[in-house]
Length: 427
Ligand code: PMP
Figure 1 (tube, rainbow, N blue to C red):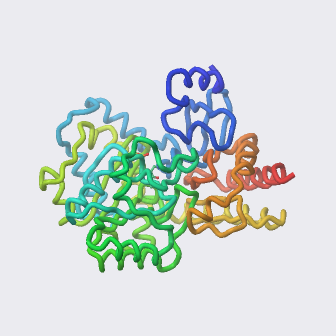
Figure 2 (figure 1 turned 120 degrees about the vertical axis):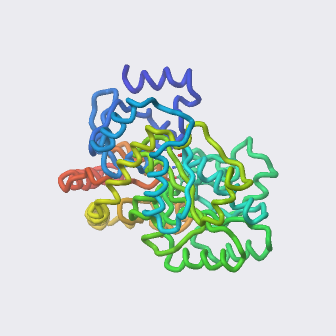
């Protein structure tokens, strides 16, 4: 069956034909591609086409698809059964590795997705502080937990449903929101909700309204406001963790959060998440403490094996990060050259292997800036790139993720495709 036939059938069986909304191509139009396999920098669809991959499973494939040490680790692990629901040596190794790589993490608990990690981190912060409210930023996405579907980015933004039906008014009332990069707004919320705010949660570099960087001083400012008000600072590093540096954004920017949430990267693409941080806070988690959080498949041996192979490689090969920086620099320099040549003043936000070309001339430092983009133009650009064999995230409000599998030749091909695609769509 072709992608189109599969999608028609899927729509009768799965809501919207997909198991996660952004995949449906709603915001760019057309039918989603059904992916059959991937290797290194390439994706192959059910229609027999090859694409250069700039999503990389929304982050985890830092080393490219089907990276051999990860494949081998999984092949070895499946010989010993898939799940025990009992503790294993690999979980201890994983915890030790994460603690050694991520600066702020003293203890860590494994879960099965980024959503689980953020939901648990908030519960722990509430249990620790005895307070109910949380502050999140407009356009940041922290998974689909009820508390976070308020002014949320990513799919929620793309689909135009930032406030989802099904989230109760009582839950929504405990989530306060501020514009990203706006310290004064956070301070005001903290003063107006004195001693009621348990946590501030943020993406230290945002991926979910497109790539948005913290302005100089923003992360430092949030850190000191949290200290002044006794608030738990949570960095959601589901996208940035192990990507912007081996210790994530917190290492790159030198800011220490109290808790960190991590996701798919730890599993090398297998369904995994984790949250960790200060030992005194993490000791609140059951059975060490009273805050309940559990999971039958948590610390799954196959996922741990894939993740250990991936993280060991990242830990032992610092040149991966130098290479990611170099690929990102070369690619965005090429994109900028094209913009200049064509007299276009669109905004490119970039850090290392994360970047977004925003179809707006405004700087994008927050949700309002992101929303000023011409999304119809982005849709046409997306398809022009796809026609040239480059697979971008199917929404303006997502970051792209590069992998070390991209050779210089492939980077040149992407730059060329971008040049041709922009010429096409601006007419
Ligand atoms: N936090 C962030 C920053 C994310 O980008 C995502 C998903 N991309 C999540 C949390 C939720 O992770 P998951 O989709 O694995 O539940």
